[in-house]
Length: 132
Image (cartoon, rainbow, N blue to C red; front, side, top):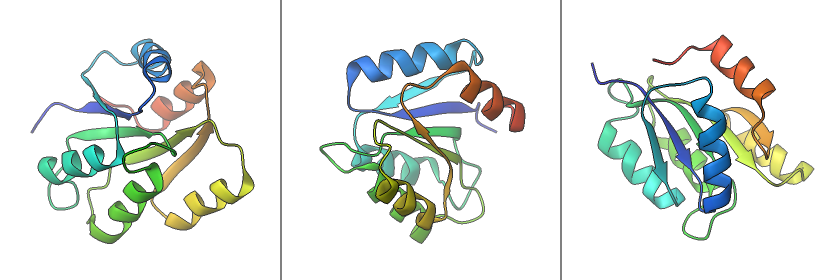
């Protein structure tokens, strides 16, 4: 089986840096960084998400990106993924009820976190489903 990783889909370098730094405090494995929703979908297809054990246990997904946003990824996962769906946490600057509702209706996100990703979020996430 492939080693597990954390996938961070984030188009803002500063936000990626802060998220990666926070994740590194609780996770020593590989972190994959992608900068668009389209790249995330290609990665998930390549890694076999839905039909074989996924290459990433956890995905932190920005909601609003220029080249395919998080909602596009959530829609793709909902329509194409099988039994091996990684745990996806939307990590966004939006605290809008409409965005929260759209993510909830996708049915595939494990959580909705308003940036920045804090130690309290990570402690809960990694305690619930250890990665590694």
